[in-house]
Length: 235
Length: 235
DNA sequence: GTCTATATAATGATAGAC
DNA sequence: GTCTATCATTATATAGAC
Image (cartoon, rainbow over all chains, first blue to last red; front, side, top):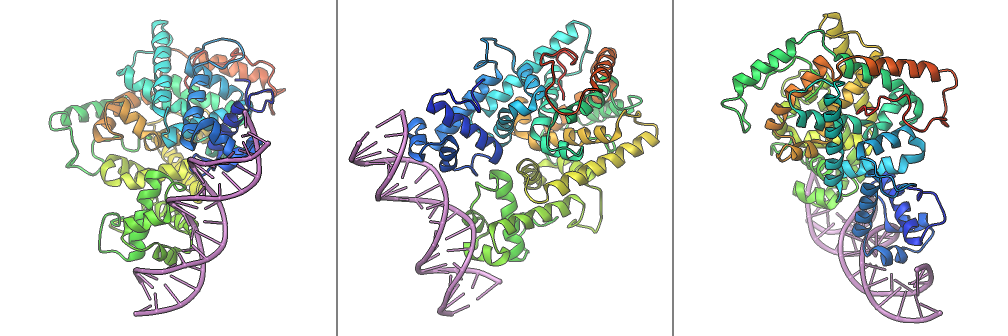
């Protein structure tokens, strides 16, 4: 992915890269074909000449980013797995901000390619966990599929909420310093957990067993927080 | 918050609720004033008569949702804290989907009120952690501010990525069943952590100590994943 | 491939009647 | 408060010259 901000590119590629920047920064609906054309230094008509329509332009951007996340379009012909690519991008946020912003938009705006991208990330995380568990580095989890799913989303969080995270740390978005300060607390959570004992886990297990019979559907008859972990921060 | 989908409301409130639904579902830029008007059963002109402009309409929606998250606009005059409200909404996803969708849009589209909302959630989570630690239920964390920050984002994840999470579990978005199946794996993570020992934590501590002198800024001289936790799913 | 010019539709917003 | 009618602007998209 040497493309963005480079000049030795086909016009088509320059338009696509400009679109990725603008779609990622402002969102798809808020970005006009004219704005993309201006950013790419061409006429609006040429944008549509190359891509047919605004929607097809978006589809092309989606596909390009998904390919990039899979490790294609790379300097070398290296094919990495998607989670690794995301780690690499996050390790160099300044250089890969357009890609990261676009990733976030893909996932929150549910464009075409969003599902495929998310599946790739989950799959990659699943394989990672499998490997770590086999190596004795990670514990067995009660539900690999779900654990991998949420672990994936937690890994995506800095991409999607980077502005807020940075702001809370007095920085301008996801800077290197923000990432540095985030490392230990997150690793601490993943190493020691949060709770001093397993009372909530046990309580939740029992509560789930109790309601597992007459479940499925909605209309729960206990709207108040009875069996829930009192103020658990998740789910 | 008895408003949405109710009829005994002022026209202004009906318009605002319709806007919340549409902005939350389709996004702000992709929702036209006309669409809001139609959904509310009024003319486009009336929408602007009541709110002045589309932007001011959005601001009104933002404010209303922030108030709701703080526990105002409630059936009773109860003032809850924001994290608790979010838990309550998630416990009854079907009823509160518009609010949850709007929350997600606020945070990902960075509308007015987004920062205030996020600050409220973080503050609420911080207080929760403080209480749990004081009660001996939660461990001390290495950096309360950062831990609370990420814990907040992890709690928001089901709101923002609910469609993907549901889809991966064969459901249509964040249903009650999805939440039920999510409980144990997440609680397990928060109880036992993920790793079998603290090798990554120790390694990260050392790596951070090593680079803490010539840090601050970008231009890291080690682009490859040397000191990083090999395939850690976060940060 | 790239442009200018333009068709056509939709948008946010206003004016003024009731 | 609520509407109809309309304006000015902007949007996506097309036609056709070069």
